[in-house]
Image (cartoon, rainbow, N blue to C red):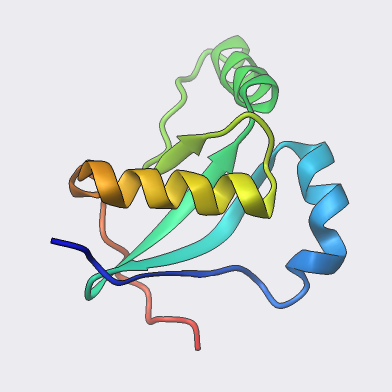
Length: 103
């Protein structure tokens, strides 16, 4: 069974793409899989490691739902990851969004 999947990135994503890739994270991805919305955060491995270590050094822990790690945070990698998440059924492990959908 194929599920309808849509990805919503903020309006200025195209203009901000180089900055987003350089920062190594993006948390404004809204994904609709079937009829369920998910708010996803994308990290590249380097930025994820930095954020995890920073939290641990503060004596805390790192916890963030719906994290997806991609080689680089680009539109193409976000789209490819969402396609794989949907096709593999891994979306069942995501926490649905309770925020109103962005139009």
